[in-house]
Every structure is written in C-alpha cells, then in structure tokens.
Length: 198
Ligand code: ADP
Image 1 (cartoon, rainbow, N blue to C red):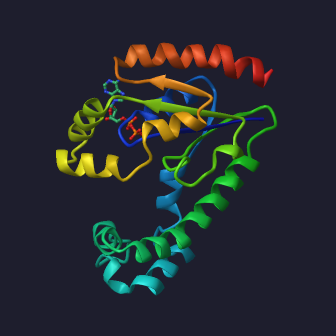
Image 2 (image 1 turned 90 degrees about the vertical axis):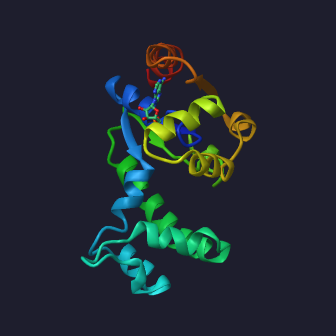
C-alpha cells in the first residue's frame, strides 16, 4: 500500500486533484466527507456535539445546524477546541478503518485539509500539496458561493503556503488551467506513484 496525504488551502484544488487521482485508480479517503458522516443524525458523534453545545445546534428535523454551530465556535477558541476534540478522533478512526479496508496493493489518497495544522505529515509515504495563488483561490471560492471577505478570512485562518511547502514531498501548482493541473497529476503518478506502488 502506498499512502498519500493530499493537502492544500481551501480553494487550492484538493478535491479536483483527488478526482484526478481516483481516475488513475487511487482510493480516496475524504476527511471532509467523513467529518459530515460522523455527525449525521443518529450517530454517537452528533449526540456528543449536542451534549457539549446544547440543542440549539440542531435543526428542526434533528440534523446538525452547521451555521449555528459555526457561529458558536467562530469567536470562541475553547468551544472550537471542544468541538475538535469530539470530531477529530472520530474522523481519524473512520479514516483508519477505510485505509485498513483497502487491498495491500492499493494507492490510498487521503484528502486532509488540515494535514499541516494537525501535524500529520509523518503518517504518509508521500505528502502532496496543491497550491494556487491567493487571488485565484478567492475567485474560485466566490464562484463556489462564498463572499470575498469570507473566502479571505478562511484562507487567513489556515496554514501558510510556506508551512505546507515545508512538509511537502511534491507541490502541484494549480494557478493555471485544469489541463495544466491534469498534466502535473499525470507526471506525479508516473514519477512518484507508479515506481513506489510497484
Ligand atoms: P479544494 O478542495 O482545495 O477546496 P476544489 O478542488 O474544490 O478546491 O477547487 C475549488 C474550486 O475551483 C472548485 O469549484 C473547482 O471546480 C475549481 N477549480 C479547481 N481547479 C481549477 C482550475 N485549474 N481552473 C479553474 N477552476 C478550478
């Protein structure tokens, strides 16, 4: 098994790269998706969140009210740490289950937005970082429905390009076209994945 940790700032193109790697045959373990699954209605994760923050973080039909929860933890680092203390271990456990279920010859790509922030680089055979310049990321996030101010605030709250580069084995530049990104993914696969995966 070859384990690749894929990271990059919000709007850099991680999901796009994950899709390109999946098309090449990689198994993608998506931390964002798992983070939603572990607090889905009826889960112990959601019960723990409600126990910590009260029923005001639920919608009328009993699902997690993400904007309400975001409002609670946004300005309160202690509340944020409490939430992370509930969700992160659940995400790690579920991700580990998915990795363990992959066949021995699999190429497993873990899309981990906060890989650098949470100090997980050493868990992977290769750390793949996607970058795009700041204004490009803001523009793409605006196209995805965020306001410019929100996009810039989210980017500023994350690790810097320099911090991500410091742990990267390979950096992909996604400031250009989707075709240019796909070429870089093809090169990464040919030069780093195929030889290592045998
Ligand atoms: P992340 O997962 O890092 O937040 P995404 O892969 O979702 O980033 O990309 C952010 C947005 O930019 C998406 O809407 C995606 O379709 C778009 N996008 C990604 N790469 C490119 C590119 N090279 N050119 C134009 N749009 C892109």
